[in-house]
Amino acid sequence: MYEPDLPIGRIGGLAAVLVLLLTTASCKDGNAEEEKAAEEAAVPVEVQAIDRGDVAAVYSGTAALEADEEAQVVAKVSGEVVELRVEEGQHVKAGDVLARLDGDRLRLQVQRARTNLAKLERDLERQRGLTAKGLVSSEVIERAQFDIDAQKSDLQLAELDLSYTEIRAPINGVISERQIKVGNTVSVNQQLFRLTDLEPLIAYLHVPEREFSKLHAGQEAQLRVDALGGAGFAGKIARISPVVDAATGTFKVTVETVDPSGALMPGMFARFDVVYDMRKNAILIPRASIVEDEANQTVFIIENETARKRTIRTGLTNGAMIEVLEGLQGDERIVTIGQSGLRDGGKVKVVDAAAPAAATAKSG
Image 1 (cartoon, rainbow, N blue to C red):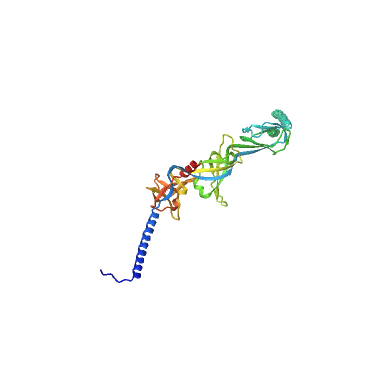
Image 2 (cartoon, rainbow, N blue to C red):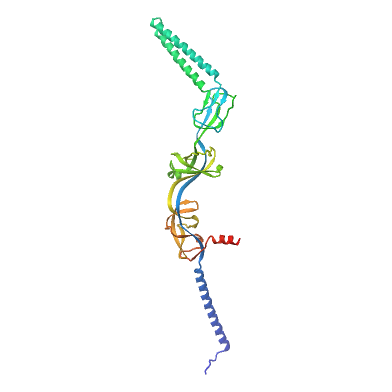
């Protein structure tokens, strides 16, 4: 048999080259398989079903509560306080007597005015008798009548001053401050009581002008009061100022509330939510599930363990939830955690969000 005359060293070199080529091909096949496996690796995500519910558009603001009506009761005549009929915290009606002043001097003035009026009326009757006999001219009668009219006015003024010794409530409300004691001598225009009407209480919200078209009288409002542990109360917009303050760019909204329990008081700080729009049975998703870029808002839904990208248009927000106007039907499962690492068409592995907590509880 013929055998080629090849040097032994050359044969060894060819064998080494062949081994190297086979090894390189094997490595390339291995890398390709690893890359394919990596591409098909499922991304762990958490999902939840889409909710449906009511969502409201709310304007929120803060303000202090104030009394819609408040009056400072002052003395209209001077005198000594001889009686107090009310105390702080007591509810009164308009016209109720709050206190009395000593009116002896004023009663004497009324009596003197009445006596003078009676004397002038008798003189007038005598003058009329003399006029009938032609002894007195008609001018005398006219002057006597003028004197009587002037004296009647003096009597009415004296009676009015006497009536002012009874200090009366000008409005319905509660006595929020008493500034006198029995035995005090008060002077004209001295403050005696402060009277506050607690129904309704009002607050002034200064709202940015961009919200002007959204608010109107009659809209419902909710308020929470920190001093009462965040307790909630119902209110409504009573009126809206028709002008915008050019200096601040705001307009004034007056919100009123009535509290039959009497827990609310003027001066309390309150947080207001005014509902200006409401959507029923809206599609709601967590705001955190949205992936935003410069042009679109997108979410990922799950179809047969595959992530599908959906472009959506959103509407009103309700805390951590947001309304979806377009892009979803409402029966999808939406990715809530892990969406930042997803691509359209990528494989996913749904992870039960409650599993770690359950495992922790079990191990404990």
